[in-house]
Length: 154
DNA sequence: GCCAACGTTGGC
DNA sequence: GCCAACGTTGGC
Image 1 (cartoon, rainbow, N blue to C red):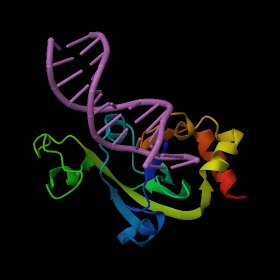
Image 2: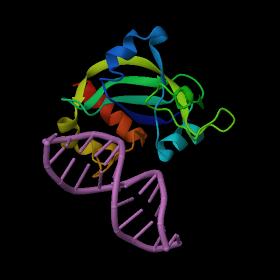
Image 3: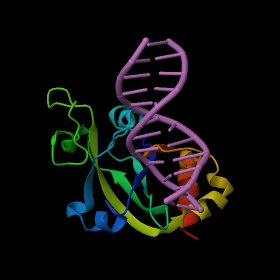
């Protein structure tokens, strides 16, 4: 049973267009440094899961495209790289702390902006819209997923 | 285990 | 730049 997720990305780091230009239109989702989000990758996310690709910390936050989980989790390579901003001195190859997962573009959509999302009753339950939410990966229900697709078709 | 201090996120 | 909200750290 495929699940659905919303994954936040700062477009200055990886935008939907960057994803579209990437080899195989796939990027390794690295840099997650929050245990709840990591545990989703470790315990629940699987190849084929649907992904809402969300632009955050930018002039026009919102859903910018659809993607899918394209493979299995593995240790996040950036945790071992002292030159990376995501380097973690407490992680080792023997005992990695952080995970990455490959994400492949399905299609670039129109921007479903945050104000429009907030105005849609069908999206009121979405985790990303809840007060104080900061999780970079959040589960999306089947109903929420369908509601997003319906809004994107308008 | 408690909890104050601090750091980060992210919209505005 | 501001600031609310939340997660993490570390002293006790």
